[in-house]
Length: 261
Image (cartoon, rainbow, N blue to C red; front, side):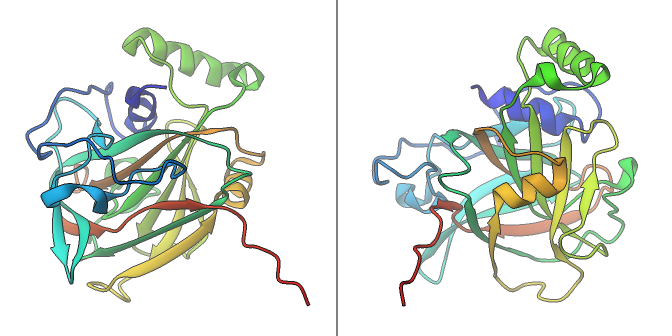
């Protein structure tokens, strides 16, 4: 699978077709060779000298949109990803091939500098979030309703690539309760799940553990196919506001071992 697969799905949150030119907002990347062979996702913290691993590639939502700035920074001896969006929208993503049943637990941490005051993820023209974790899944597109199949074919004609069968995003929402599923206004194949909400804990690190199989079933009403892409996205293009955010490493882990009595 190509990085454009996930980019096209995220594009449904914005106007126009996804493009993936190089972006100066992404600092020079370097190969990573310090991760365990069985780790399905390269961490932000492995880049030597605070240089991002080349596996994390630009996720450009639209050529005309201003890109979000991403760079690695050191905080308390930890390397994390800093994102700054000034009326901007772009992300980073990594191609993966993960069986959700084998590694169903998604673990990550993030913090934000402020909420996006006028953001509302239920409205197309105000759909921004200071932080997003994006998951793209494979699946049987032939089983989808006809109108969804037409959408997939249209995207393929416009871009020359196929988009993921389904995309699930974890977001920080202004008001909606944690666990709320928000449908995308353009496609039923893109859903957002509220992982954090409101102003409590702004400026603090928050750690999350989510069961992606259960969350996918809640959002889409079916079991997930193979996970083919993982991304992060900080965007303020619809509201025109400014936000700073920080992402720690993202991990996928096995089910916890059973404790015998």
